[in-house]
Length: 543
Image (cartoon, rainbow, N blue to C red; front, top):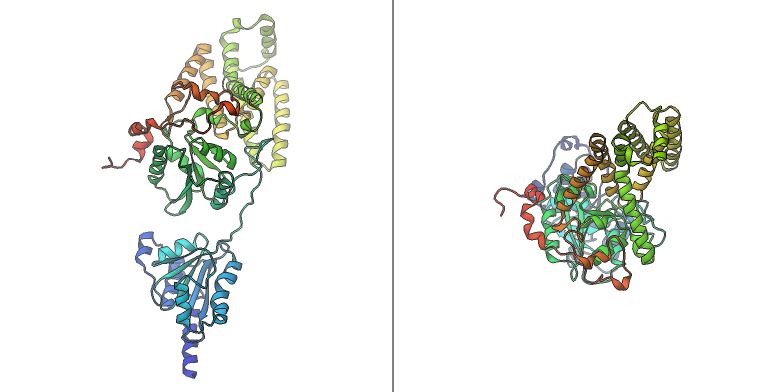
């Protein structure tokens, strides 16, 4: 008996000797690839498994290895391994440790081998998800996403138990897409929570969430969501294909993926819609679109993302169709003002004074009489100043940022007028242009407008209204040539589809819309070989 107790104590001393990090420095400089970890199989020796885990993980202070014993006779040593702050310790205590070291005995399981047989049969451990792994890649890849590994001496496999419990931001109202009427919920940074928010809105067995991982280092989880009975199969296949062709070390936000999957990666126009509202994603799925939801970001990507979908807001469908149609018209007016008003002003005041009524022309000339700069330089300086104020308002803390934006604009505008750097009319033009940009519901579309404004101003200052018309022509040619996942960017205007015009610039009443069979044709997918993105992804020898 004494000999058995001494042997038991010696074995635990060997295990505990591996738990302090006395020899970790020699391991910390080593790095291991996934292929190497796959070749490193789980050993029957618990001591060897712990040693290899320490060797791979190095001097990580958040790696926790907790040893326990199974059984009172035929005692087996075991170790529970997890990453601190990624798991819920209550789950470990209540659903793993307690069943193994206490509940097993009350159930009459005195022998360690009997306890192991119950674990292998799926009993004792009361957590919902339990898997088995055969190599260290299985173990470590699961530890790093918040799961627990159970290693048992004499067993050459690891039991992976789900015990995720890390803190995350709770579901709150959207700051980017606020509405007066409608849902107040917005996505968070946890993929499972975001999937649940969509499931709550679409109770259909045809709602599919296909999961995968992207990033050789980050191993970021993502899923594509679609309705089997509504979405075209070719669109889903194309989304899968483009995602599978992405090779990158890490994905920290949805834009990493968006840049890879665009049809025309060199275009400044956004070709995917992004939103942090689950109701917008649910509505898009009912239209036959595909949503890409990425872990660690509260933004979901919706494809195809043609132009008119970028100009729509969730609130358009929560208010009456007459009001929503008028708001949409106002939104398109704001788009034209934000794009062309500064360029039109520069062209008129520089080349086409005869087009301005005499009284108004006299007012413009008198206000600009003391301005030492041409209209283009004046407009350029004021636009740059407005952009600086806008960016400063975003980066500063919210209360301070609002004060800087408002007070800064007032003080700088008034000072510029008094210093004869800018005319009062130019300040009005720039302010109206900036405010109109904020009417656009998609932030990515607003960024595009803010950039395009400057080359249009330059060509207007060079060639007048003729140059502005040339700029508009090239702009139209570009947007009409774009596609988003095989769908024309300006659909349903080009090609013209009168049936789909009911929900573009105007919104028809619900009883006049056919929402059950939305036209999201992917007939152009077979021509995808000609797209630039395809050639970027295509490898030598691919058909």
